[in-house]
Length: 293
Image (cartoon, rainbow, N blue to C red):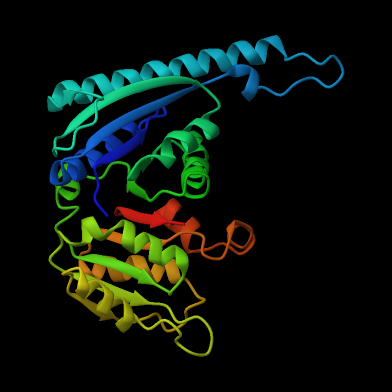
């Protein structure tokens, strides 16, 4: 899939600069536009109402408004500083010619709804996991909003990743987590543009059930049609035990620069109750992960 438009939601937290830097690495190779978006939340939507009197608590509304304003200013400043440092041209107009451009948009409203709305009409959404604990849950929820509400692939980047590591994002090797699911298939097709640029791709197959209904060889054959030479790695001894850790360990061993995987292939409820690969990757992955639902 061609990558021409990259959406970068900015939240006014410490991961915003990393998100922009990661988006720029991809944009430079593909000649893509980076659309930075901040949703300034409406305090009345974010503040619970008092059942007895039917009005919002004034103090809570004021505090929420100050917080929303603070986040909006941080997001705008982060974008301005990044754009000034990189010199990327600000131009929101679409063009058929590959060109790295950018633009910043601040909109007011419901964060979930608006990120979903803008997220549906983009090729890739880039998000960074923040260092601060108070923002981690928010980002995790917004990742779900994009995966489920927008149906678009997400490139999740660990905050604090070095510039050198980011620069090697598309050098490879890449590790593909394969279980034959629709979600994994969508992640792979969404990531074809990234995988084509990589020298090495390794497929790690997870057998689910008594028989291997979706062998890794099928996937490597498909990738070969796109000019991608992929090898098959060893699956974990127990597919139900610490699969996420197995992926991460295999990625480190291969010195992978990217993991490609389906997200929530067993549903959010099962992930919530039993834990799961997706949740673990969102929380703990120490390298970029491209995921799709």
